[in-house]
Length: 414
Image 1 (tube, helix red, strand yellow):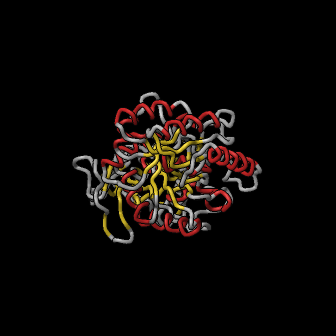
Image 2 (tube, one colour):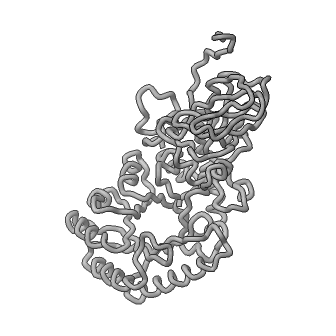
Image 3 (cartoon, one colour):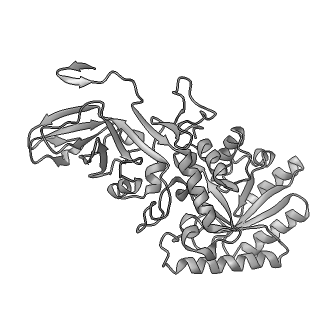
């Protein structure tokens, strides 16, 4: 321990910031949800780099926990998982004019079909002389992807034609729910009614599918009538509640991410001291301030106000605007035991602070908080059941500590 101007400075060289990822929590959450929805199968969404947890890490843990399928938004995400050795059945559903359908079919990736893609996928299958495995998606009311009910019979007829020609195998029929996180909303019943019509229409046209899937995490946990043959779960797998009135603990889920750093500076300031850009906050008494070396460049929301952090045995609040690289915490007293190098937990672990708490402070949801953590924050994979760092996933940057992967890379709901 050395000192600079009387301030103790630790000499240990721990990571400056890290998102600690626990695969055991993901396995537990998948198993918990699977037990609840049985006999329906479980597709786990690992899109957006596994909701910020690392796609490869999340996919391995999900399969180990009992996932039957892996779901991603983009084919590029699916191909990265295949390259990393993930062999589970996989579905990608959000395509663009540049999506590589040939490579997707070659790598045994199922494709969601909402309309225009069907001809492109058929052309890719004909080029390969290999049938594409597809899931037709109907828009039952969300208004995003998916075929409208008006065009559904036409899409189904086209799929039947391509299936008869040996270019496609229609494996599934699916849709996505808009308000399942508010279980009392009637719109979910209306969407399920449209979906049942869509299934009946497809069956009357000659399609016989093995997978009907509708439920996202909230519907999986609150609407058994939406389970059908498979559920698609995302945020719950990472230990986050999709409901405003029920916590992860209430649902038996364990958060899989702990976001932490260390105190970068501590200083005493007088009453009236302004804090950060815009001077939107001024302290009303002499106090000490701690500087936290994470900001919106790391994914900490700039809009967050009075966000909680845990330092030692106490929870404090942020003060003033979050900057690109840092934000300030009011330590609430001139005399403080907090010093440079002390551990800081923004959420997760044993802190008592959840991603939902940060979501409240930033006027957003826990989904956004966990997925926005940036590439400057290494993902440190520590399996609580094995008591050691997990294997370092493919794509780890040279020089990265064992068990650590850079966020936004292969370190690695729906």
